Image (cartoon, rainbow over all chains, first blue to last red):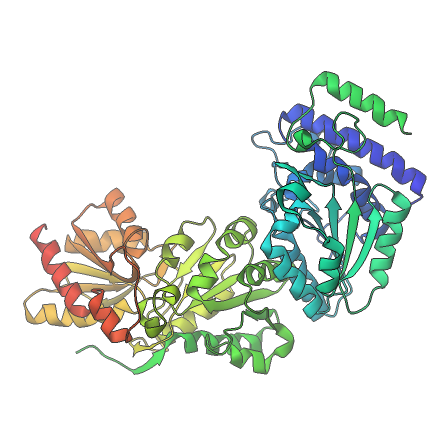
Length: 273
Length: 315
């Protein structure tokens, strides 16, 4: 798909995220908005998906390690027409399949596993990638993590295992929006130099601007070509990207917009097209 | 006299059954965490190196990887010492494995005080409590090596997460290859009418010895081997409560939240009768010979006999 088309889809995904969160009255806009381009390009240009059968054994696997940003995943899945726009409006409501963090037992096509407790996704991805290698299948595995999440020790157990087992079918993405609940990541507990850390753990590291669709697209292509090593894409992003009053503001980690703020946000998003 | 067919550690039952499973089924994948030979999964490693991974001393990743392997269609078995298999990665087991109902089988070796000289750090005494409280989890505590073999094979084809608790030390083999084994179904080891001793794991043997002693003193005890702690055999427990009117539970585990508590939950709702609990009394273990520890912490046949006499005073 052309970059121009991905831009239009990204704008639509941003609007869906904000609409869902306004209706839900709780949830996480900041980290959902920072991951939009990373998710849209992955789903529309790189991941092998059978939209008619999400359990297709030939599919690529996606694990949302930072499960709290599920609005971006639900919105992308809605773009692929496996969740209806009406269902998006049920986010976080009782009886909904769209839980506040992704739930496997709700049988949503494209949700491989329940996530939401930070630090778990990379190990899961390592397990799937090891499984595919054992089966001698070429399915790829993608894991989206947050930068604050890199503070979890379990990430580094998984990082060590991924390179030890030479899992070149694994691509991790770190959405480095720089903020976590308590403030800037480097103030709460500095994770840098994050690229050096992954390099020293034996990974192929690609650093990009996570909102530049050309850079995002070429990073996934490069990851696909890497042999004998897992790849991590360190994506510099802006928390709350696309909505001026949310951008780079930790307050919008877990706060939802009012109706008025939603209208303002829509105007800003439309103006970028 | 209690019929004993041999003396063997339950961990070998686990290891042998994995080799058997692996031979028949290429979906079986085994993961270890640097304790490969001591938890007896090296047989599988040698025979099926392509379906084996040693993840090093990293139990969080051990369980996370097992989850991923389950997603990719394998039936993953992980095994390490019980403290590290159940405690360290408890939240991965909860949120990643149980919540997603993944087909992961957890072998918790080196359970109980019988780990001996390594001391309290390595003596797993809490796994029954912290595993049975998890939705979708099945918890098995086999009594000898033969039963461990059957439990492991049954676990492989039981849908969803299963925790199997077994041990390092030799224990008397008291069941036979031909003894039926079904997850969720307790086994009557001895009939009796005055009191029912319900036990799991290594304490089944101690209970049988206790029943022998009691018989000589004119007390006719029934002995139930409840190898499945969850889902527990409610029917067998209720029947025994009605039949005998008093219950003693016996486990090599903490008193709070474990096997005895699981039995009590059934008894109080259905057929309340006096109960006594033989278990580790809210304390950590220590270094020592297994037999000395079992005696010091009150898990011998004579402790069960004393508990029976106490409970009968309240019948």
